[in-house]
Length: 206
Image 1 (spheres, rainbow, N blue to C red):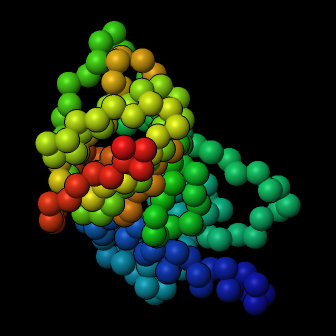
Image 2 (spheres, rainbow, N blue to C red):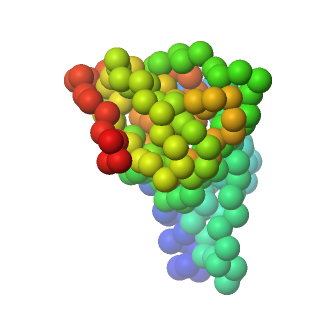
């Protein structure tokens, strides 16, 4: 095996572990979603098991990423980022960042509805920052209930129950930054994470 190929395959395990932790998924949960045993996944991440197409394909499907992202194969000269929208609870999230771990950037699109939705707050660890591109966003954080038009931004600690949606039933587009727990709570699933603190939302225009 040539040195370049060996280096690429050797980096697969740490890359898979970083991606799983960034998505806040346990080995048991990943095994249930992919059909690959927990012990095999553990050995794959630690480098004790060689990565094969049979193992990587279900992982790529579960993580909703191209196979190249799992193996870290060199790009072939195309500078474009191929965005893959994710739909959750009727809302569309377009990932704008590619690297696993850390803060993740999304464009979020809330479709128009016949009437404004009823807030259903959730909470998890971390912070969120958002900027409204179009429409009118209703943001509920704890006992604060504010409406943000296009061009306004907000930042808040997500340990307090929070919810966002259309203020008037119209479509809304925004940019939003999530930490690891935010991605899991809003994009990956509806499960709640552990809570911490009692923050206050901050609106730079307010």
